[in-house]
Image (cartoon, rainbow, N blue to C red):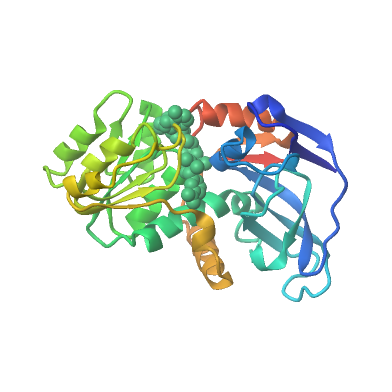
Length: 323
Ligand code: NDP
């Protein structure tokens, strides 16, 4: 079978489309024929070595497809079932072997396999950020950076479902239009405007209850200035680079702020939480309450181009790879 391997850390050019052996499921595992794999920003961190993995490895953490072989001890799934996953390494491939307890079943009549692959990682991230890290309450005001990105568009929509007023930041007018379409009440072009000043103006000097910041280095300091006293800074990514070491006394000076740096694995640690988040997303998609925008579809062999586009800020919504 074909897979995208990383044999050395580096730029998109290190993504190597290779023949590899078809993996066999062990006890508690199933083999899935992938209909699509999701591209996520974390894949670029693993490719460059910012988040190191033992070399060589097959990239990718997210996908969906049909169960094709079942290992001993698996009772929940049979061949022919459709399943989706996030956080299982080796998804940039035609087939993957995954632990059955990390899989979420879905009904392919209601949710297309490509959609299921697309929603898992970014969707469950938007879910835990809005429901668990900072459970948004009706009437609260939130700031979402990179609001037209994969996580961003979902975060805006789910925050609206929870009754928030949403301020989004984006780099271009085209992205601003998409963020508004996802429910953002106000959109700031943070490449042209000072987003802290704009947030102060929009909120009448009150500040927001929470900032969801996946941009990191370029936005972190100013994001603290957007918060009302005792507000929450949720730093969940580093698209512009990691935030340097930070003086905690600043949190006192800026109003007794909270900072957290969460990751999806902490919020899908139990099967119950995993199913709650994924099934909520599938239900919203099935009921047309959530628009899953697939902004780019690439062949598996073109994963390098998907990475160039993602890192070049050229993309909107979700990118998927088709084997
Ligand atoms: P996006 O589709 O959001 O792409 C990243 C976006 O970040 C770009 O489109 C761009 O939007 C913005 N950006 C700002 N500055 C830069 C820069 N210097 N270089 C590149 N992009 C920049 O990606 P994802 O939805 O896949 O991920 C978004 C973020 O969320 C990532 O940081 C990722 O690591 C994080 N994440 C964290 C998770 C967690 O559990 N902690 C889980 C999932 C994702 P614009 O042009 O509008 O500025």
